[in-house]
Image (cartoon, rainbow, N blue to C red):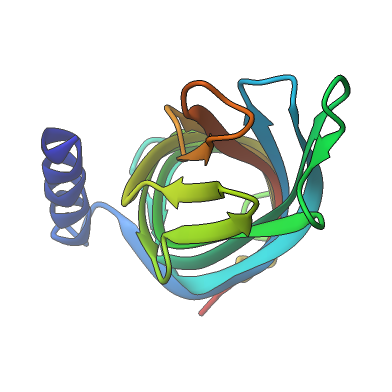
Length: 210
C-alpha cells in the first residue's frame, strides 16, 4: 500500500511540474453529493444507502493531444451508511439502527477524453484511481458488543462522464468503486469472525474552473 501511495505522490508531482508550454492548466473548486452503498459479507448485517458530500480544490491539465486531459483533486469526503443486525432464530438486534460515518481526504486522478464544440461545450468521459486517507474517529461502538473499525487508508477507482460549458462550468456523475475493505464489523454475540465492509458510492459533482 505504501508503494501505491508513493507512486501516487510521484504522479502528482509530475503533473504539477508538467511543461506549461505544451499543456493548459486550469485551477478550480469542486463539490458534490455522495450516495453511499455499503456491502458487508454477512447475511445478518443489513445496510442502507445514505447521502454524504465532498468538496475541495481541483486542477485540470489539457494535454497537446486533441481531446485528452488529466484532472486531479484534493477532496474532503464524508460518507454515511445505516446499519442493523438481525438474527431471526435468536431475535438478536442492535438496540437501534446505527449510522456509520467515514471522513477522508481523497485524491482522485482521472484521465479524461472530451468531444464537442471546442470551448463552447463538450462531453467528457473519465476514469482513474483514487487514493483516500481516513481522518477523524476510526472506531465506532455500535452497542451490544458490536464495533466498527475503519481502515486508515483506502484505494478505489472512478468511472464517469459529464459535460463542460464555456470552459468554466463542469457537471459530472461517476461511480466510485472501493478496492479492498473499508473497515470491519465485530459482533461477539453474533459473528464468529469479523466481517469486512466496503463503501462504494455514486457521486454527482459540480466544478468551476477559473
